[in-house]
Length: 338
View: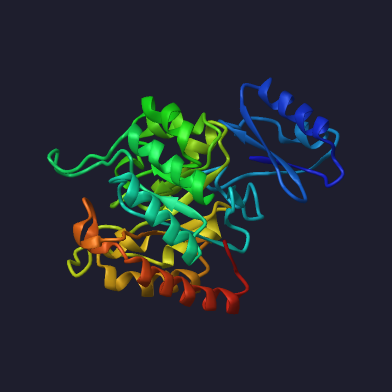
């Protein structure tokens, strides 16, 4: 359930309510919105006396939450969450653009890409330092050296760094260099990792698993939120179906569905969602049209010689043209490109 505080209720009143709830053996999360503060109650509250909370100072109402994902639900927080990292903004009418190579390959490659995607309008730089690969013989990333190169690119360009963390014991290391930590599709249900990033103070981009349902996706986000980290970004990157004409099937209806269920920002990965560079621009435009909160796109200065995912990576020139088209659609829809 959630305990909705009155508009004029003080933080002290909300904290007093939270203390009373915790004395009953339940867990609480204080969610401060622009208009209202909500005390989210986590645990088996079926036998608890709701009237006891309704009589507390500053309480407006006590509402039962139907969704299993309590903290991610719009029932808990009606207004959309906005997540910011440097100049990158996602959510609340802001459409953020994140771009960069699949993996960091060299200082020259990442710096050149960062300069080019920033000039085209990106506010975030993606790039893998630790790379999960299907084959153990494929390029696994530059690891900490790759993180240092991403930080150097941020120092020069001001772009927010988005990079993947693969194991709980790498969380602190990646936090030293990254602005947003990405949980890849393979790790969406790695619950120890989700809890570990939930304990840090950096935004988390959670990618949907290739076979995950929407409820499983939202409950994975709940693991992060439940640890106290309220900065979660949902990323639809396509699911595995019977089709073989694309690498994955990109269901853009996920944007509308997720926005009806959660206050968390929703971004699209059209690169993994299609697997073919020639399909990515139209899917970027479509992502704006369905009012996603952003896109994360693979861009490489020389896709033909990329060490990973060259077939789905845009050249800087095509990326620039793509963002110009996206900007036109965003303007019509009243979205702010960031």
